[in-house]
Amino acid sequence: QSALTQPASVSGSPGQSITISCTGTSSDVGGYNYVSWYQQHPGKAPKLMIYDVSNRPSGVSNRFSGSKSGNTASLTISGLQAEDEADYYCSSYTSSSTPYVVFGGGTKLTVL
Amino acid sequence: QVQLQESGPGLVKPSETLSLTCAVSGYSISSGYYWGWIRQPPGKGLEWIGSIYHSGSTYYNPSLKSRVTISVDTSKNQFSLKLSSVTAADTAVYYCARWGHYFDYWGQGTLVTVSS
Image (cartoon, rainbow over the protein chains, first blue to last red):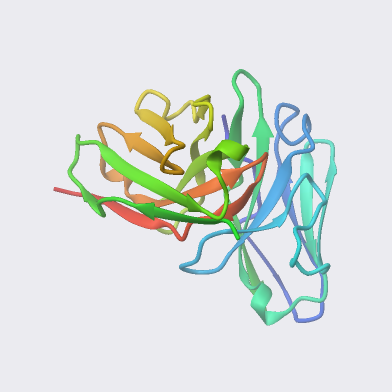
């Protein structure tokens, strides 16, 4: 039941695009299309940004997109803005022995 | 608009049981979805604790399963978390959230500190 693997930090300048990876196994990320991404600003609750690999909830900017290849999911943010600076977490449903949820360790996005 | 609100003691003594409740408004728990608890130690990442369906069916994080009990009270439209034998390592912000293979609505979170 290891956490999904994310880079500890990424950075980019305003207007640029960045991608955050989330690596799991065939029992979680690779086995189900149930990857979700969350944005968390300091002192705030996480906010759902992407669900079921690539779907955006109503109200989330189309600058946010998700994808998956094999055991690795990715979150791409295009046209970086200052307010995108936050922590980002990926999550996946898994059912290797019993159904449960696993999170990534989180990635700190810095907008330079 | 679905809203969730955690409540419970902010300070728990070591070896005792942590108890939190999540009140749901704007949606009837009996209508569907799973309802879950997630925690975040200070300065660290998110950890899923467990989830419950309105029928009472539960899924727990295997690493916490021996100490966790999640229950639901559909008459009060709320669900609860009990975590026994707590230690300082259980100090965290505890969130409740609605789960449908992803957490779409979250409570604001409540800090629980384990200390004597």
